[in-house]
Image (tube, rainbow, N blue to C red; front, side, top):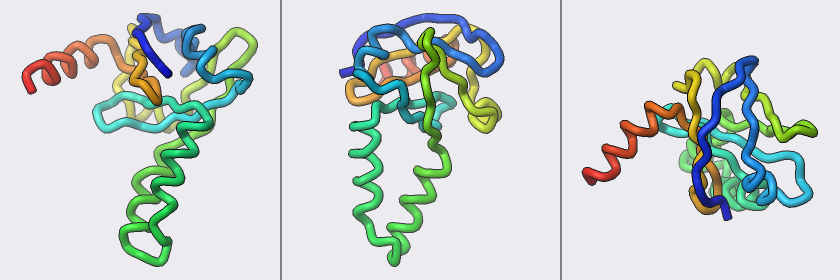
Length: 132
């Protein structure tokens, strides 16, 4: 389970270090899946939870409007990532054009996945969550 939060700096070249605690959640896997979130953040999934999410979408028949729309909302916004020997990974350029990450980054656990937020954007989002 992904728990806790970790502040880090975005190193440039679209590269981030995944916290060691989160790397342990991946087990022996060196790959995981990322997905563009709805508020300028990125969601990360280990292979098992990614499969669960994908299966929940794929259960809708492709022959239905609901099935086609669900697939188009999820899969074009997703990518597979591979960690290097130092626990770093590269965010695809397409993601960089659609997210709001600048320099300081917060990587937070969200149970079945983790999220990557620009620190100032997370602060604004947190304020909004507390008001609800």
